[in-house]
Amino acid sequence: MSSGLPATEPPPMRPPDDEGPRLTVMEHLEELRRRLFVSVVTLLVTIGISLWQVERLVRWWRRPIEGLVPRLVFFSPTEPLVAYLQVAALSGLVLAMPVLLFELWRFVRLGLTVQERTTGLAFIWWGSLLFGCGVAFAYYGLLPLSLTVLLGIGKGSLEPMISIGRYLSLVTTMAFWCGLIFELPVILFLLARVGLVTPAWLRHQRPYALLALVIAAAVMTPTTDPFSLLVATIPMALLYELSILVISVTGRRRAP
Image (cartoon, rainbow, N blue to C red):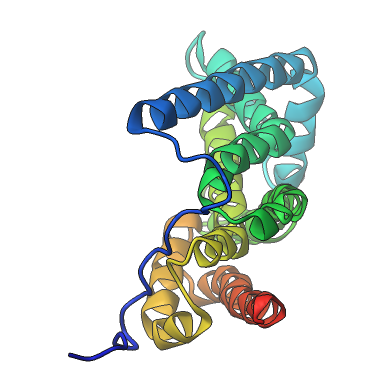
């Protein structure tokens, strides 16, 4: 009977920390309920704060399209309200991200060793920073490029008339998915901590990971041109390689 695992399979989860208390299934569910409650309350508070400043936030999100269209319009009485709520929801998510990651860590840490629990601050810090970087990448990189390409189609013979709801839905969706995908290093780092992935396994899965990243980039970018797809894919591929490097370095430090 072979003592090793195939290189194409992730390693099994290690047993839970013997030094900490073992929780029952009901206790785990109760812990999850508490973490979800705190997360939802925090998110509602940050969304409320964002609604207080929603006019400024909307003006900020309108900047990438200024100069490309004469003005934004709306076609139903409720469209501006829905659009403003979308902006407030995204801004609230960004503000709440440190608390959301903290609550996630509080739940996951129950299955980690005492030494691994000391990485919680780094997990929260880098997770929040990377999500913000993803939103910034969408705002300063993908969004101007996509708008220039899309609004350049039919220029001279067609006049664009874009509603505020459609525009803000596009930019907030793009920013959300960029922020989520930029969490890739943090997610892989956490999976490596609990023993689900290893650097060797991630290297072996690189072709499939790159294919998945290309598909994700195609979903995020509303344009179909290869240049926009490349601009969206390259940072994600670099994040994947960075994840492998970070897991390898931290794994060597933990080795006896």
